[in-house]
Image 1: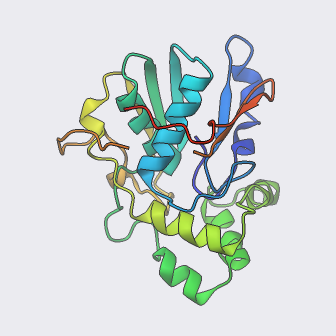
Image 2: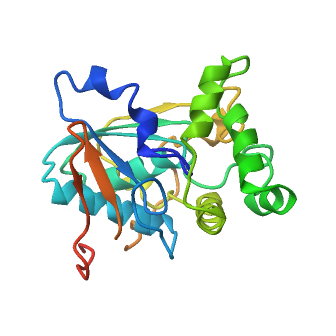
Length: 227
């Protein structure tokens, strides 16, 4: 699962190596890339859409990998499908809102003081390690969301208020969480460490998923979310 306001193509540098001995599936979350716009951006809907994609592709057992909010979504999906998830790897991911000092200005502040293009220009620099080559920054900027300002605003605000802590205690598989001292979006103290708050996972589309062979699926119109 890609970071918020990026696209599934952010994984294409890794997929060829991983796909030598396994099927790799990458998705565009609703409101991103080739997927439809999402009028009701919520963590619950994103998790439900990824769950539907896994079931539609008949993935019996799988490892889950996500970056930023994608890592939280991966953790939630492991809780939703515990009999299928073999492991979760979350990179730069927080379960809920980061503590003061993390994530920088809130989305309203950023988008009230700059355009979406200006925001993405800034975030492309902040998303990579200090002194990264310009080609890395340019690649990240190229992969940002192209669904327009209205969708980008909605997605960003939803991401900054998402809370995955209710799912975390229900994850049975091993978890690998990676954070970095230069990560302005998710400092180490905010990582998705498995969560300590307990409770049932929340109850709960429009997702296009792509495997390494570039196949894709859409959730059938009018179909209900699995219980």
